[in-house]
Amino acid sequence: MRILVVEDEKRIARFLKQGLEEESYAVDVVTDGPSVFDWVAGATYDLIMLDVMLPGLTGFEVCRILRQRGVTTPVLMLTARDEVDDRVTGLDAGADDYLSKPFAFKELLARIRALTRRTSASATPDTVLKLANLELDTITHRAKRGGRKIELTAKEYALLEYFLRHPRRPLSRTLIREAIWGYDYYGASNVVDVYVRHLRQKLEVSGDPSLIHTVRGVGYKIDDPE
Ligand code: CA
Image (cartoon, rainbow, N blue to C red; front, top):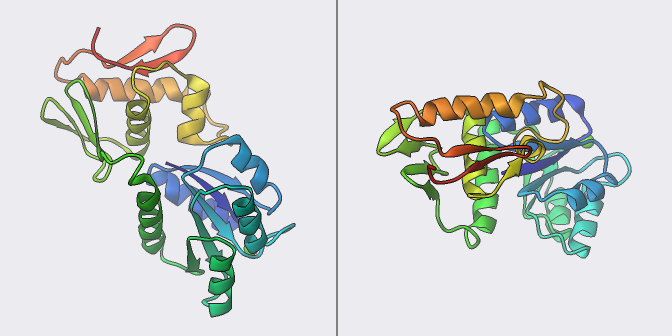
């Protein structure tokens, strides 16, 4: 799941990015209104979180333009106060839901789940992803291999989900890194290799054959054992 956070207050943006990444979402942050269009044109988002008061264009204007351009990604408006006017304007502009600041993070997560479930329900009815004897429950985030439970960290889960949503397809390190860590990741360049190694160790701990295969010169793919 990939979320675009549009928020000009650095402290809030940082808090949202960190919190959402801990919940296995990939997060990109934009700090002004007009830049949103470039980001939305360049990537597929499952949700856009849109602050109202932004430099350049207001969140309402951004939302209205997105809808005019046929972008159907769910939009969650973040309003500064619990004002009825803001809500009505937001929904008029094509937003799907709104949340008043300050909000509890738990509340935010519940709204995100509701909005993304609504849109993905028809596209992906299966909440359990399967390959060979591996199962991943996308609701509970639990993995099982041959009935054995596997504990995953948030990032390991996100990586495994990404693989299982693109099975049998070679995926480049760049593609994987952008999907899981976001465009603005400036950490270790071998982060994908490190996490693939962790995942393999967990998936193969009882001697099961490898499902994540190295594709020379490209990256990795998940597929049946060779
Ligand atoms: Ca603002």
